Length: 156
Image (cartoon, rainbow, N blue to C red; front, side, top):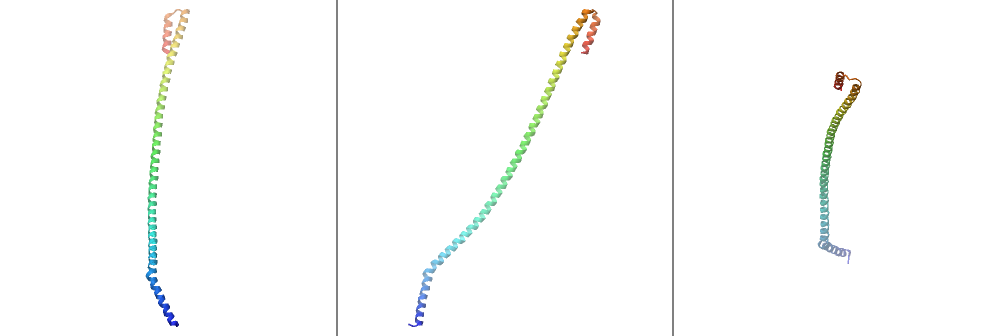
């Protein structure tokens, strides 16, 4: 055998090997590579979609948090306003009650003053009568004494 014959035989074997590889080995390998590329592309698109969904969800959450904060602030302001109103109402009621109590105390003090004056007048009249009785026991001038008692009573 010469180098040319061996070389031709090796070329024929090599061509059979290339044909066999391209016919039976290569298609499953390319199919597996294509399937893997498709899975990777699907995974990347799913990841992009998940990122977009996450961004949208974050936006919705931020909006809902902002709405909740606004609602809480409004409720707090309403509660403060209501508390202030209740305090003002309580103050006005307390002032009214205080004025009523002061007026009642003044009226009671006035009544006590009138009673004390009446009692004092009664006591003075009793003393005047005792004084007149003592005067009458010593002197008996009814006209002068009656006039004196009348003036004394008018002054009281």
